[in-house]
Length: 359
Image 1: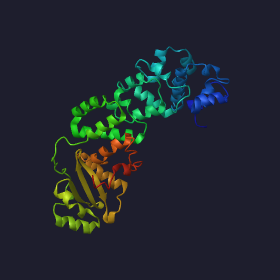
Image 2: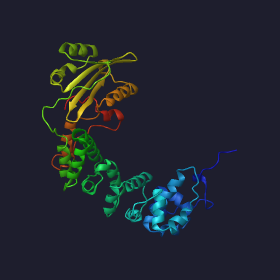
Image 3: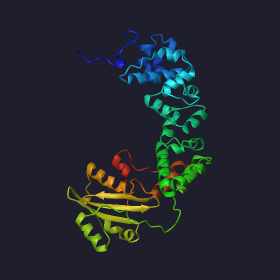
Image 4: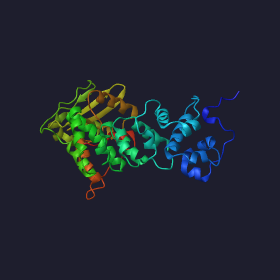
């Protein structure tokens, strides 16, 4: 016997109906599925209000991506259900008010599947839904920008000033996370209230940059407590010996080590090759700045992840320094200074920002 067909393989209305060019233009990637439920000339679908056409796309994708039969008559629900009932079905439970009105502001053409997922997740967020209700036109690319920031920043005053550049929005999100480390949760909450009052993207990003400045000067943290197989380098002699053993340039950072802004370790564990590891301290605390084998060779992913797990457990973070990020925030939105130079960060390793030994 052959494999049983899933709901996605069942044609509920007999033979598939080819989508007309008009349906293809309106429905895009959803056209074939819609043609199965609203056959040529697709009049029942095309004459629906745009909100219900978007709802149809969401429900059809949900059925096609599931192997279970929910028994729902999608055509009846989309064409005849009251707005409140349809909203509850779309949200799989209680739906905040205004869902169908928001769908009606999403344009005539249907969206990509991932963009609908962004919309529904934001509509389930008590703060983000306030933003959606105030948007005269809801665009998929704009929702992608909103999703990229932490929930605490999804408030009208901040969202209105988010630029279109994904790298800029990502940097703002990282700046907020670092601000939480610097100022604590309560302090970060007060920062958000201040950021809401920004009257431009430049004002918002300058406020974020200012939040990454030290509260007190001269504060030096003790190095983190690490397992004994992390051998700290505490003398100039030990630093020179390490530089010779690993054939690296860490001896150039003797002054930083002396001032307590940097910590260097020879990581020796019997199951792994020795590692030269450097931590740097900035206003947000200790971060991993470098980890290399002898001759500046890279660690394997598994070895590096193991070390990062140990460091993360004692409060060491990864990524760029707060100083570098602070300087870049302004350039993102200043027409006279930008565009900002953003280092490569498409891969997991690139996002670690290893090699950032200078602030």
